[in-house]
Amino acid sequence: SQKIEQNSEALNIQEGKTATLTCNYTNYSPAYLQWYRQDPGRGPVFLLLIRENEKEKRKERLKVTFDTTLKQSLFHITASQPADSATYLCALAGDSGAGSYQLTFGKGTKLSVIP
Amino acid sequence: KAGVTQTPRYLIKTRGQQVTLSCSPISGHRSVSWYQQTPGQGLQFLFEYFSETQRNKGNFPGRFSGRQFSNSRSEMNVSTLELGDSALYLCASSLGLPEQFFGPGTRLTVL
Image (cartoon, each protein chain N blue to C red):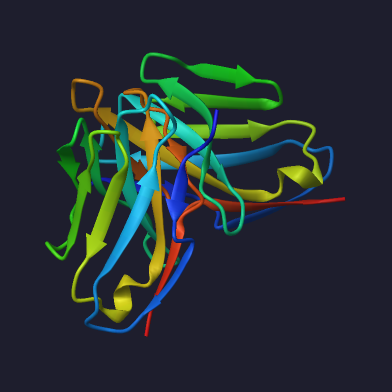
C-alpha cells in the first residue's frame, strides 16, 4: 500500500537558520507533490506544488526539491522566523483524469523556530 | 474572494447518533473533497464531489456519506456515530487543479 513518511515529527531550529523537512514515499508514482502548512485549530494552507518532471521549485523563502528516483522531497525554509512555526504536511496527488485529484498526506512535521 | 466555510465549527454528539456537516466552497470551485484528521492517522481522504457526482472515494465505511448540490455546496453525513469518529473534518475545494483550499474544519467529539 502507499506509504508517506515525514521523517521528523518535530524539528526545532534557531531563528535565521534554514529548516529542512523531508518527505519519503513508497509504492506510489505521484504526478504531483505538494506542501501545506497547518496552524493549530486551522485547515491546511497550500504552499507549493512540484510536478514529477520538475526537480526544484522556489517561492520567496521556500524551496522544494523532488527526486522521483529516491522517492523523496525536501522542503526548505531559508532565514526562518518564529512566524514559520507550524506543522508542515507533505501530500502526494495522482491524476485520476478529468481534473480529479486525490491527495494522500504524510502525518506532518511540527517546526518550531526559536528566537 | 471568500474562502471555504464550514459549519458548524464544533459539534458534540453521543454514540449512535448521526451528524451532518456542511461546506461552502470558494466561489467558482466545483470540486469539493472531504478529509478526516486525527492525531493517530493524520489526514485521510473521505470522498470528492464534482458537479453533484462523487468522483473518488477513500477507504471509509458506508456510514460516511456525502452529497453535493447544484451550487457546489456539499454536505457529509456520518450515521451511527462511534467514539473513533471523533476528529477534525476538513473540506477542501479546488478549480480542478491539484492545489486544494481548505476550510477551518468541524471539530466533532463523540461521547
